[in-house]
Length: 121
Image 1 (cartoon, rainbow, N blue to C red):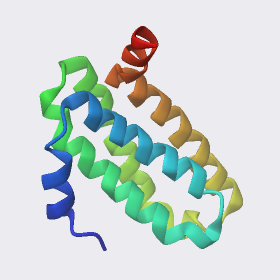
Image 2 (spheres, rainbow, N blue to C red; image 1 turned 120 degrees about the vertical axis):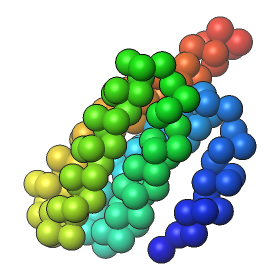
Image 3 (cartoon, rainbow, N blue to C red; image 1 turned 180 degrees about the vertical axis):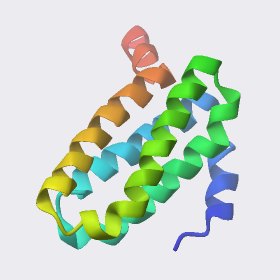
Image 4 (cartoon, rainbow, N blue to C red; image 1 turned 90 degrees about the horizontal axis):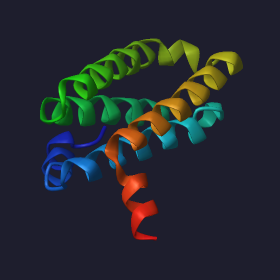
């Protein structure tokens, strides 16, 4: 398992939009790896990391964003608990991949990073 104290120290050095972008990237990685049962442990670590990213970040966001992040954290926790069994089912893996992709898009939009890129391009 990852040393999350080290991860937290590094993660918290970034400004809020970058942290949200990192969360979105983790969710995109969940989406891209969940379909392959060989990646079961990788997905489990990514789910846990994403949960922690939310824990470390939500309190610094506006209340509506924090609420959405906490809802996402609950969903990630549920997936984390059922993943050992769900990872053996192709339908469940596909469902997580789809949900994680949608979550990634939402969190990336929350970060505002795509707006900055569009404006500066």
